[in-house]
Image (cartoon, rainbow, N blue to C red; front, side, top):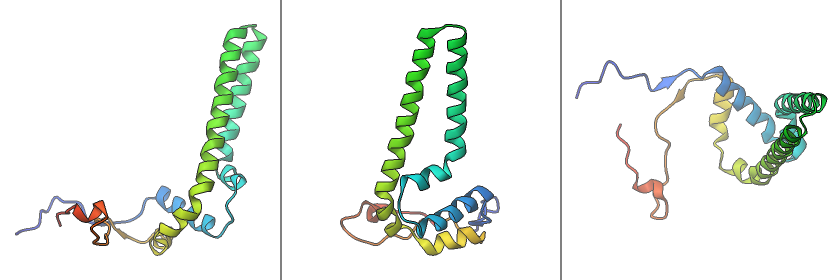
Length: 137
């Protein structure tokens, strides 16, 4: 059977965002799990959200729209609690995630090497759902 000349190549150079993510994973691999480490990586986003909410709440207080101000304060508290819960969950599952991550592939991603974008290799086992999945090559 002839190869399709219009198919994209199976190996491609890594985009810069994936390379940055891989470098961050390698940095986190050797660090102890903590919520502050999570916020250190997300600090700019959280700081911008806090500044935005504080400015909007101050403007609502200035023009005396108190119902809107309390609504936005509730949204702000909900946002902070969601971010905190996400950080707690991430810290809780990190030890398990470290065990199942293919670190050799992450190192190659961080170096910017080409990666095979084909299907992952699965262990044939009657207990895994992946063993029943078939891939076309």
